[in-house]
Amino acid sequence: MKRLLVLGGGTAGTMIVNKLRHGLDAGEWEMTIVDQDDAHHYQPGYLFLPFGTYTADQVTRSRHAFLPDGVDFIVGEIDVIDAAAGSVSLTSGRSLPYDYLVIATGVTPRPAETPGMLGAEWRKSIFDFYSLDGAKALAKAMQDFNGGRFVVHITDMPIKCPVAPLEFTFLADDYFRRRGMRDRVEMVYVTPLSGAFTKPISSARLGTMLDERKVSVETDFLVEHIDPEAKMLVSYDEREIPFDLLVTVPLNMGADFIARSGLGDELNYVPVNKGTLQSTAYLNFFAVGDASDIPASKAGSVAHFSVEIFCDNFLQLVAGKPMTGAFDGHANCFIESGKGKGLLIDFNYDTEPMTGKYPVPILGPFSLLQETRANHLGKLAFRWMYWNVLLPGRPIPLPSHMSMAGKTNEN
Ligand SMILES: Cc1cc2nc3c(=O)[nH]c(=O)nc-3n(C[C@H](O)[C@H](O)[C@H](O)COP(=O)(O)OP(=O)(O)OC[C@H]3O[C@@H](n4cnc5c(N)ncnc54)[C@H](O)[C@@H]3O)c2cc1C
Image 1 (tube, rainbow, N blue to C red):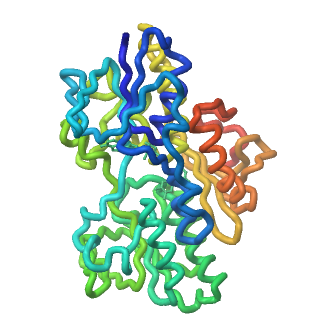
Image 2: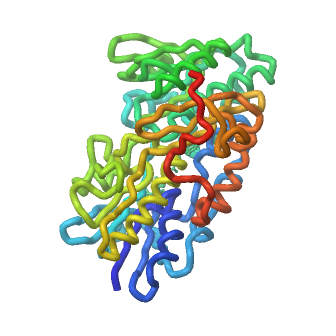
Image 3: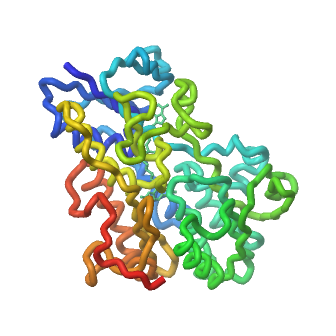
């Protein structure tokens, strides 16, 4: 028997075992997936918890329910990979040998990496929404907030779902308006980037949307520490930003076992070929989803499109053929903008978001780089799609590569 070991049963790992279980002969291949717990989180849903739109129950399901027969699911914490020996050790002491390895352990927020973030004000006036506990705690803080300086902050890039802090800001503006207290809230958006977003065209569009909502923007801000007593963000160039309520996105890093195994860069991202996702160090292993260092957004959509390419390539590889697929960095993200509307952006490694319709030219129903109700409904419908279509690995009639059909260049 040949052994395929998948580390991480999140978005990418779950899709991979669902797709490959159909493609690999069960008489020849043992497939195992490891995760530290049995709670699969629909992370895009974290955005809505602070506003009471979703509850924690709606974004959490058992991993077991999504794993196919013929795949061994092991609950355990990964300790270290011995790539030379071809085995992975769990902290329980169990050793799992493999012939092929997929690292799909994602990234996590690391508040401890910024001095002062985890200090006396953590979860009192300093919150995050990049974890389920954080989003739940923030929901209470939003209800209790009566006005003052409300600061949304990104520690450093890359982060997963780089538009999520902007969406959070737009939704917070809408939330304060609906509560009749917007005039008592001074909103500030603090980013290490030189504009609202990474890509120039969408950055200009999203920056205008922040202006329209009277959110002031502090750019090129690299936080050095947080002073919890003074309630102040302090940057390396000694700028100070006071807050009454801070919603921060802590540094995002890959899993620590990647560093312990000597397989990551300084943020524990695994270096891979950006087309095939094959490790640059070992030919029998791949990193898929947020865990890799590809220069694409860390997003569920990227995980989905790249898993399609990876699985086809993997079946070629184990059949002794050359891998012919090359991932193009395709990402698409709905951006909630408040008042029941949203935008959609679609882009890849080389092409910036453009205007037009998606996925069907002229018809849409989604509009690129424009605020529409259909985009908002698409974002809400995506939770159903995630649980029922994406995770089980069912085919979706969307091309993995970015298509130029329906795109216009009105920028
Ligand atoms: C607030 C927020 C909003 C988002 N919104 C969107 C959106 O609108 N659209 C979009 O496309 N994407 C969005 N994302 C991003 C999306 O959720 C991730 O990009 C996606 O889940 C990445 O999948 P992954 O499989 O690489 O990692 P994950 O789904 O995070 O899975 C990694 C798995 O590895 C496991 N693991 C890690 N370390 C260990 C260890 N040592 N031992 C055992 N198991 C381990 C974890 O338990 C986890 O289950 C959002 C994310 C957040 C936080």
